[in-house]
Image (tube, rainbow, N blue to C red; front, side, top):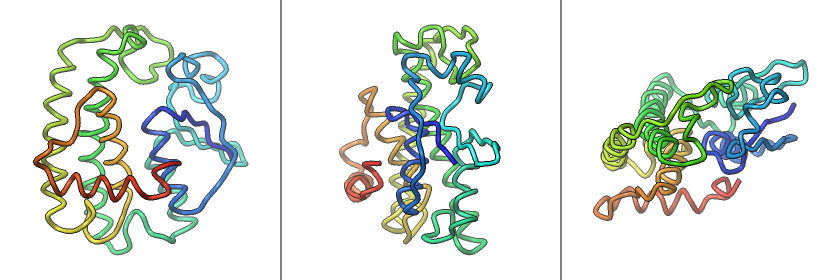
Length: 211
């Protein structure tokens, strides 16, 4: 199997961190999103959506959604569990994972793509080469949503050292990638959010964070 990757992009990083926590290695193929390689015919033949990451299995089956990729590996290699063990844990992780995606990852993408000159005509991820002009108003909306993301992060960390409780999980992977993505546009964890800052330092020190 192989992973179509992009070292600078946050969503591929989520998969790399997940695989690193599992101790899984595989062939990776680098695709340059900033340069628009993901929208060229060669890559669109692999994934017509133009999105990364893409996992390609030995039989040719492909997945281009992070959670589909991570679910596949969680099922074939359950240890260490990153998507929960019990029904309750799985539900909490799924619930909080979605919030980290919408309020963190997607909001960060709104700010980044609608202000970066390289995405002036492709503000929507992928989109198979369509022209989608940047919308400046989405920068303000994304910024406000990121503030809500940071507030939720601080609240969840009242319950334990990790966002979904006592154990490190996919929620922490998504959240740390969202925090680092927001930093690209100079939006950071507020200094008064002490639990979040301590969590960020701890999670960032894990070997997987360097994957």
